[in-house]
Image (tube, rainbow, N blue to C red; front, side, top):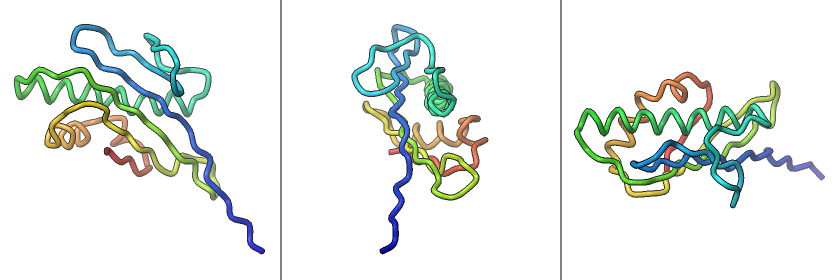
Length: 124
């Protein structure tokens, strides 16, 4: 009988955007929003960095298009690779809120952090 390995999952880590206030971070489900990213585990900090960069990229796109952004959140989950070396195999960034698809595509294309990583990053 062959062993079936399951990848380790990380997250969620959420970045909350509100037009009237600063960006807030949430690590886990139901946790209180904080003014800083999680720093207890580097992988969670990395995930928060991806989401925060997408938030800032959306701000750039919105400013360029002279559009006001509504409140929204970006929730990131990740899976660790089953083979060596240890690394994140993929991340999923789920948008919670109403944002135009074209703005999301453009923000993803200019997001320095996600463009730097050597893993698949999916926006949903």
